[in-house]
Image (cartoon, rainbow, N blue to C red; front, side):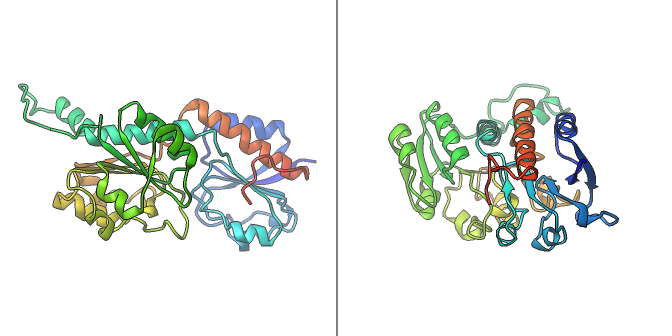
Length: 318
């Protein structure tokens, strides 16, 4: 008898996920809109397979008396009521570790693009105004030898710091806990958040979204940063105050900013952030390499099947 699974429709790579779920003997009910879909027999559901766009509430899980597992395609689980799952005795699995390098690479892509005006330079080079070379235009900020402040020195933040060493950067960090490995191996220096903001030429946000990190960077924090600094958000949209970032960019209180995430995601097409030339925006590409997404597919389906079969979930977060 097939396992009945409620599945979000936009998980990529689609072909790999579908093949693995078919091999596992799963029968799928599709979840395509923000609200849980009507017409589904919630009493028959045994698993939920979800990405970061849908809110998996305690109420939804409680509607499913046969539910055995919630499997998340990705690391961040801020879209899942983890406390609710714990109260119902439901395991939640995610995919830690496998996307650390890809997300760190993407953090650096954002940082370098913002520092050196890469996107603006590309547009200018393709446009009608570029008719002669001018050495005075689009001057950026030098990365090599600068101070990098990492907010959130977990798995991904550590990989960001490793790459910073190749640029001879001073590595500063702020975290819930000290990272002695990074201090010993990379010479990273722990600071309070305010000290980090004041001393850094580049600041990357690599922390998870929690109640403590929601709105972590706002007007007060940006005011403490150097006016030539670059702020990079590779975490989640709500970790920074978008309006405060927009105001700072418009006023020239930052050299540039860059983000892989927004709130909401995507932004409305008339949102003023989209018109800001000194802001680089990516469409949530943090883990978007074929190799990483294939590995995430395998891990998330392994979690799902383990939960369905009553075995220990290999990558359990709750």
